[in-house]
Length: 533
Image (cartoon, rainbow, N blue to C red; front, side, top):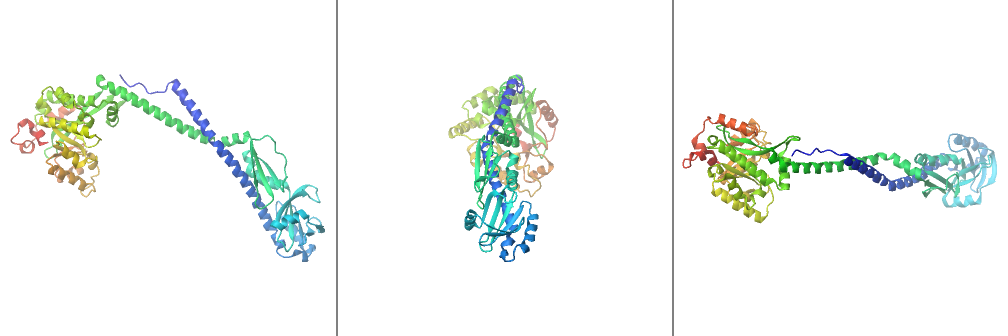
């Protein structure tokens, strides 16, 4: 049965849209606390901005109290005072008073004589700087007075229209639809705030008797959310993509599992064979069986995907026995091509640890001992196994070894078992993984000492050696100088279908072969290359 088409139906699309909307809504809700923090921060910034403006104005007029100006008299001071007012945007009037609090000079009236209010004098005694909010004597309009002194040379009183202070606050808060109330000595300088609001925050200046209160309503939250709507789309988008990806992954896995379960019956699984070559004589001495899955809809499915999937689904034994059956068919139908050649088959630890493994394999070969002796089992070094399973693996492999089946340790050096693993089992062949070959760039490559140590290990344990993954002439040359005889890799041959492999063997039959290299004198002739392994 072919793959079910992996597509989102109408209901799946609706669910995806609903999930996106839900994620968007929840992510926007996450912004609510940040909206509250934001308006608190901008309110505090507004207070700070007013302080900075007042400090700058105060600095511009500080020169008038640097010394006792009252001794000079108003006629000498008024022109300079008017020039300072003209050069300051926010100040509209200025007046000077002496150390006793008596005003003596004004930019509007020139020489004057009136006393500073006692309430203001008391505030000045505490801080030397204060604000007042009252009607201007000339215009009759309510104005803010910035009054400061140094305590000994008199002081300065500056008239600032409330609008300017309010505009400074609004420049910080108005763009966010935050309503404000600015108070000077507890008096609202612009009483226009509606009583309908959701929340408010009040911050006092630490330098001046001034406070700013911010009020927010639903419009503020709406505007804030609108400003950060990209955040909602981002979170919702990422979440939806992640969910869709997971759903797609589960669908693919379920679909792959379903199709893999039926692939044997449907004839979608095939065995390819990668030749193993004696690099000295260039003769094909054997091959490794490699399972391939060519689905009619999805095309070629990588073994890196379907082999782990088969293990998870409990299908790995069926696949292994299928490969063994194909290997038997190859040998049985072409006896003249396999008189001295072998076929290796990968056996996972899970399969090898099955108590029925020996019986199932022998039942496949149905007493064909000679054909079975031309099979090499490749057991990977990787994989976790319990102590009981390891005992069962050892028992099974010993039985096969007694029948003359060769056992190879596959991908040696990539796991953690190492020498201890090799010594436990009746291995006669050691296969070095391609990872140790691909980094060979010259005869001084960093990985060569490790490769040499594995070659020496195979010699010390009297094990035949095969190196996998040889892809170029440089790698072959280096390995040849190191004494490696048997090579598997794209340099000689890629994995190929059975018919193509048989054609290759028929061409390879007539190539020279030295008997002393491939068959011991005391063994029957058909064991030649198998026995050399």
